[in-house]
Image 1 (tube, rainbow, N blue to C red):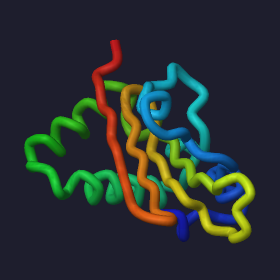
Image 2 (image 1 turned 180 degrees about the horizontal axis):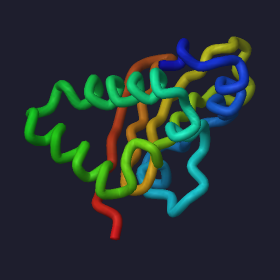
Image 3 (image 1 turned 120 degrees about the vertical axis):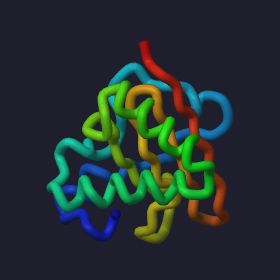
Length: 126
């Protein structure tokens, strides 16, 4: 997905710092999601985001993955999801260390450097 972004989109999508770890990072934001909005991407890029969503859900039971996608739709759809690629403060390389899909009632955080860990938080928003 990152490789499909233009230089201007990457500037919008890359965030300096980390999304936080432990409890504060799994709380839902009411608004102001960091990164680039899925709604601002091209049709091809939006299809890639949907593919990424299905890929990250693929280890789970089909009915659970389908329920997650239904919840995302009820919360406003993939159009309301933002993609953010976090570069650690003080990093000496150009690599991002976290990526995150985030929107109303949905957070999927994935840390790729220096080791892999992930979490997801999903809820129907009233």
